[in-house]
Length: 286
Image (tube, rainbow, N blue to C red):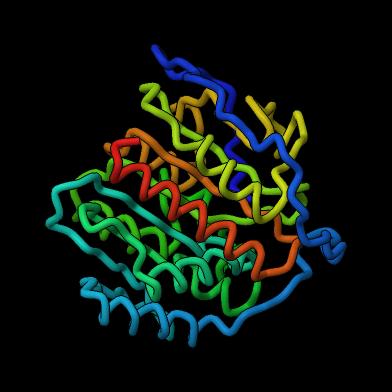
């Protein structure tokens, strides 16, 4: 759960068109009802998943960089030098949100990316938290609040890598929400570029419920499953990853929130399909 908490407007921003949501009612898997005061669902063995990701990435020609801290390391993958858009993906910044790692593994294994796209992928930004199944790292820091004045080693290493890259065109940050009633997303789009929210929600809605709530995560929705917060990162001291990206040259960002009270394969597939439809739409110019 990303919790982008601000209501300050970006000067000159416009909301853009409201994204459509599926009107039919496909049969979805049932909610598990396990989550109480936090995530209580399936766990994964993180290190073997990361090794799978690295192996498949090498097989498909990605470049790998690593940064070691203690007995963990951060893995940064890239596929650059293409003529198309530059797309950034991340997962695993909260250790109690395992579906993003599974989605990244499956995407890299299946290699469905359009040939023209440039890709930067950070598959597990919080390996300590993912090992222990906690939102925070071993020092108790919520890494997704640490991007303005970083205290954590993980975020400092991540920012070193990000700062070595040219700006991205679109970011896709994979998350889960243990409280939500379905899938939803945040869209940061202050320059009102063509939106990917509608295609993402329409695709995901065939796999799992879209959260129908009028308020999600303490914020009003613009349509079922869609939050377009009016935010000015300059007025917030504790930046999430998405704010740093927005302030450092990435004009369009999505935080994708799968509902973690549904089965893990359903959530992982929802995130995978969301990324796949977004990247294919980007390659087609929307």
